[in-house]
Amino acid sequence: MGSLSTQNRKYEAVVVGAGPAGLAAVGNLLEQKKEPILWVDDQFHGGRLDKYYREVPSNTKVNRFMLYAEGVSAFREVVKEAKAPNAYTILQNLDQNKTCHIAEAADLVVMLTRALNESKGVYKQFGKALHATWTESNNWKVVVSPPGGKSTGERFDSKMLVLCTGSHPITGLLPVTGIEEIGLDPALNPPLLSTMIPKDTPSTIAVIGASHSAILVLRNLYNLASTSHAQLRIKWFTRHPLRYAEERDGWIFRDNTGLKGDVALWAKENLEEDVLPSSDVSKYLEKISTTREKEQDDYKKHLPTCTNVVQAIGFKKNAVPLLKNGEKDLNMEFDPLSGGFRDEKGVEVRGLYGAGIAWPNRVTDPEGNVEYAVGLGKFMIFLKDVVPKWKS
Image (cartoon, rainbow, N blue to C red; front, side):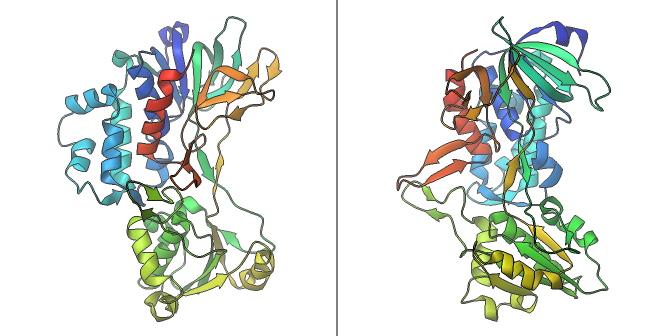
């Protein structure tokens, strides 16, 4: 979608990334009349949400997705103009106080992304942001490589640079060899996962972690073992008891770290110490409680009997463009309250901002517990608060 006119235009902002956070950033910049906007992504199709997690049951109530869809006027205009039925009306017709599948939320993100175009002040540039330099002219010069990276890239000038570059699952080094890794992304996709495990030979899959993702993987594996993959067995390594989100008076304890929705219910009914021995899950799953101090010994003892391992132990920021201030590399630290960045001396980096799972808002609950807010509705709330304060 890039063009000569796209390259020559002076932009108010360049937004890198077109997942839910990038989309929300574009919407909030439009709300503040910060246009035209150059939006950079290699696909413009909902990011990892749509690419990997459509089969995942959401841990978020539908009304939070509606909050996202109705958060800014640009989104509301898209909804008003869209022919029904559409992704918004499908969500609108669901029980607002229950959860849904990520697919419904991903379809909403794709629908809104498609509709934000040049007529609304948004110019999409397919490709990858390679590097960006803050210049003496008080703007960013951003170089974007086209898909395939076969050229040195096109250069764009912008007053602001917004990083919504996302994250990906991490894995840790294990003290054994000969065990095949199954990535977290395919492990969260039941149809794909079923093709990666043989049906007619014994398999034992280790799952490491006790996060929402880890419990989803355990449930996916149990469903396979109890139906189509009769020779499948599971070893579950966990350092701590299961933790659940809890509704309090007007707020949620462990809102960003606790188990929620159907996954929480399944865990309570099948994985807790007092129910696992009598649950049907125990026919296929062995729980191995460990600690940070002894986990390596437990891995050495148990992993050699496993054919595969799934590590659900966290996420790591994706690579960002190489950033410079003039000729000097920028070593930056994110401010999770403002969405801005500071350099190694603590000085604010002008015109540079971030949002999303890689750059989340830090929140403190009424009891003083600190978490990082991740989710479509939370991205929207954060950006509605901070974008009006962002300076070009």
